[in-house]
Length: 133
Image 1 (cartoon, rainbow, N blue to C red):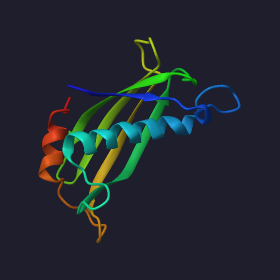
Image 2: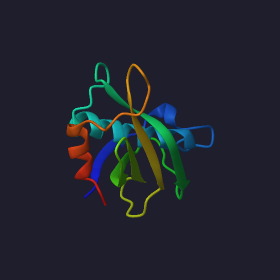
Image 3: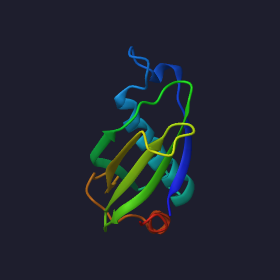
Image 4: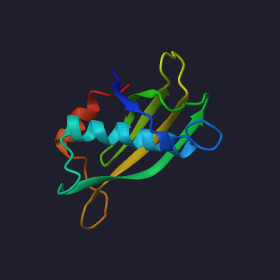
C-alpha cells in the first residue's frame, strides 16, 4: 500500500530553465513524508519527544515537472527498523503514468533534546507498518 499526496507546484519552484528546480523534488519528498507522519502517525513536530532527522536521501530524475502543475507523490516504506525508516517515493506529473522522479529518504528518529537515536514511537510505527511494501 502507498500513501498518496497531491502537491501543487508554486511559481517560484520553476528555475530559469522553465521547469521545477531539482532541489524542489527533495522538498516534495519531505512534504509527503512529514504530512503522512503528522496526519497518520500523530507526529508532534513542535513538542514531541521523538523527531525524525534525515540521514540519507537520493533522487533519480526521469522527466521535468513545471508550474502550474500538481504533483502526485506516492510514499511507501522499504525498511522499518527500531529507530530508522527508509521510505521510497515516486513523483508523478499531472496525467502521467510514469514517474518524473523516484528516490529514497532515510529518517532516524532521535530524542528531541539529546539528539540520540530513540525507538520510533508506537503510533508512528503503526502508521508506517501500513506502508511497508
